[in-house]
View 1 (cartoon, rainbow, N blue to C red):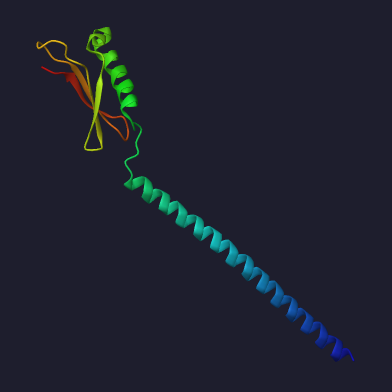
View 2 (cartoon, rainbow, N blue to C red):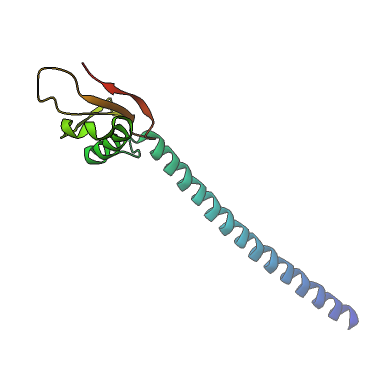
Length: 127
């Protein structure tokens, strides 16, 4: 009788161990699945950001405001006589902002800024 009870207890322990093992494996599998799927999504986002042309300056209006502000700090209020400023995107990477020439004499202030990080490449006054 004691042997029978001992055997029953051992069997119950084995069954409980299997349930714990299966439950633990299931939890481990679900955890690994969600972690790996979130890693894949993160990699895709990084790849998309790398291949896209999205930068800090995405349109003409923003480029003109930034360029005009920088040129105003360099040349002062004199640049106002060259308004309106025009912006042109060169090779999808650099914005060239320049003033309007009203006379055939002289040049206009200009500035070239990288669209991805607003780095000023060059600026000056054309001839």
